[in-house]
Image (tube, rainbow, N blue to C red; front, side, top):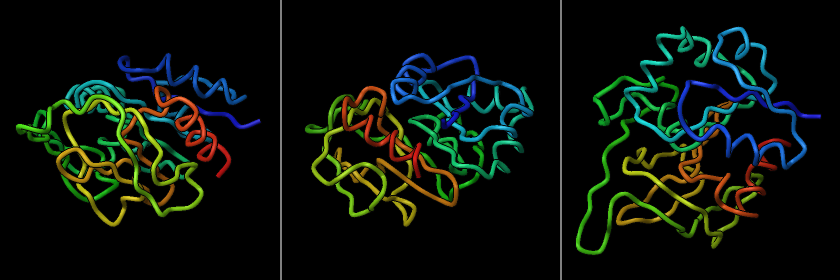
Length: 194
């Protein structure tokens, strides 16, 4: 049976992610220690929170280098995806630097409200991620990562929003698979079996 280790930074949506992964028949544990991360079979970095506080917790727990050097399959969700990039405007903070680019605050307009809350349609031509173009997934964010060659699925909310990114062993999901019903479950299952 596959085992997933959740990085517990003392905030965020750990409970709902843990429930979603357990529903797929996966063993789940939590850790806030470097040794627990280094020994993980699969690693999940959850989100919901502020980038500055998350990086403060990562540094205070001595996890930055361990996260950067983790070689197994790894998934960052929402803020967890943002942490993979170089910098965030949210608190003007340096992130883990696993992907190039800065996470920036989204801009509202007469037709686009921020935060981006709710269901949005995906576009993807990437195989093996459990998603297809036309699927709807649930978003809740005010900051967005840059659209880049690492983007393998997008949504639109005034601008193209990288919904899924991949670089090496790391995958990032801007949307919340744990709140996206059967589509989110398909995405998690594809990550668990890849």
